[in-house]
Length: 288
Image (cartoon, rainbow, N blue to C red; front, side, top):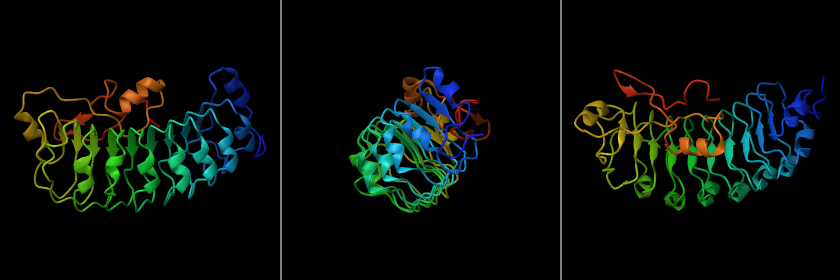
């Protein structure tokens, strides 16, 4: 039996594989063992659903870390040390108790994929505006009512999930996000839409479960999910794109996962005959 600061008994065997990956998900840890932060060559660390309430500042010692999964824990804040991981490309923080992000979060300039769904965010975290390389931003099931006018600074953004928030009007800043491929505004309080045809790169727009009476005006290449979408798309003779997942797909290698998260060929449509694809989910066995 390991003490709270020691590595679990099977950690050495995991690391011996040479993959520099450590899986600690599902264990009752409350806090990350201090010895983990001494694994300076570690590249992938999964600590999902472990009951974590805090992270040590020493996490910044994991200088080679590329992927960090901390979803489904009890984190209320992030240490500044987490913001000093120079190679971190994917960070999963969904299902915690976060109300804000540290100001130093903007230092994560290698970050390409951030999943922070199911937290208590009332305002869009402004440090994110400086993450111009971020491609995939999952912010569903928070408490957002508005988006900052500076959002178009995030020129790398290709997938933006905002379902389950509290938007009553379509955020004007989104109309200037001309490089977005995927936009998900399911389960908000939207009563209508502006003309979305100027979003020339858009490939998937999901607006289900809003009090709208019909689909927005979009380019013919956009796959729609929502009230009246099936009828609208039936008028076309265009092939439909595959729908990307809402959940992290950890079973993929880095390049494949990146392709998946921005709407590449790895994604697939899961749906029903009545309303088309409903949940933008990963294929079975590939999610968290």
